Image 1 (cartoon, rainbow, N blue to C red):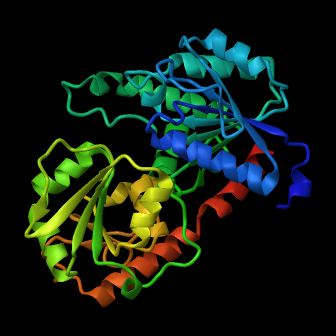
Image 2: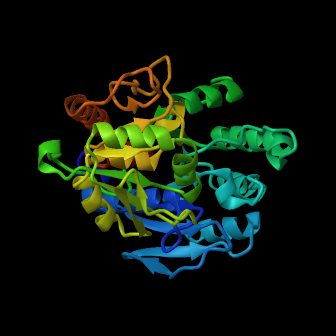
Length: 369
């Protein structure tokens, strides 16, 4: 689709939970998408931040921002009504981003009222997550899971198009709505840390391994998977472990004589440089069935690293297969040699290239039009 076909689409209104400077994967995703829409299709984005606790400027990189400071359906309708009804709305949905208990009734009510006022308006919803699992029973999500599901159903029925990042999510939405809606589009997440057009071979990189993500997921690696991490470092002859992201609070210095460099929170460019000069990454979360929604895994794929997991799936999920797109350090697969690691990294990169940012932005532009 060329820019000339998009001339009637000047501005997209994107509803997000938060944006930078907050550390928020969905906000980073939305900002990257907005950049690419502007670059490839000359489409501008106006952001509506739907989290009242967010603190930021009224503009980011030339994109204007409104904020819903009180979780109110009326306020949302008023903000949306300030724009021409022909401006499509792109909702980045994750329930917990808009409400503490994951039930943003105000958001869905507001969109329903806006839709009734402007029935020809176009709403595209990107479901980053659907709802909490509801277990165990002593958690609030157990009691609120039915309400979270009903909100996801209402959103699906309100939306002109739905996009999600995993086949499992698409299946769930189809089941909940009894397939009454148009086909749900599946787009595994792209890398928020940038992409490489060509990946350097391992022979051109340093023997570094990366542990990147939320402090809790990194803690799992150090506390629950230390033997698998040690084995991986030994077989790949790792010289340095880079810990990226908010500190875990653990006292980390070295593992089996291999130094751990705690880098803390870094810019995407700085992280990209480390990934480009590393050969491997270790992760215990998310599980294989949720890899397609992991921005961290996407970044590893986009930079040509071999991702080392501690569990696998018996079936191919979202095109990903253990031993082919990621290595499983479960003691059953033998030792990971450098040649096999290089092959897995290249397979993961090719999988990622099928839905990289420039390809995904065409899909979003098409449905927003």
